[in-house]
Image 1 (cartoon, rainbow, N blue to C red):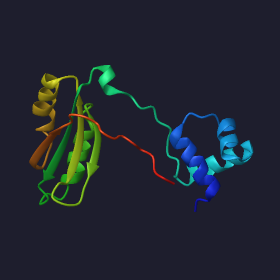
Image 2 (image 1 turned 90 degrees about the vertical axis):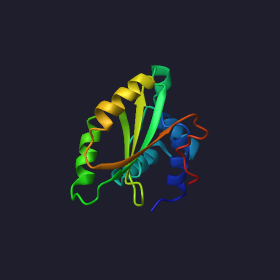
Image 3 (image 1 turned 120 degrees about the vertical axis):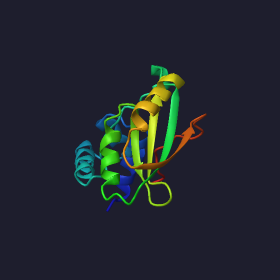
Length: 151
């Protein structure tokens, strides 16, 4: 279980994941050695999984972002496994999520422009196995992109 010190450390890391441990310890009001031990324990426990670099894909020329909601033919016993394996091979698919409900899978596709998206969609997405329906949602704007929790 997390205590108040762990939660302080996590709040600080959510704000600035690149904060040096010495500064993190000072801000959390703990000794640097304690901070290191807490961070190591949270990594071992799976609370801290990674430190990531967030890339602005638009700045690199990927201006089209499409969320594909996919319904599968669930009469096929390996439908989920086979489509996920094939979707992982498409470089433009940057996120794969599974769901319970009417929609089975969501793929997030990035493309340079509409021509690039159309090529990926026709040549790669439509070739994925076991699809019975696809709904495409093109992103217009990001209103909120917050990955922090009030802990």
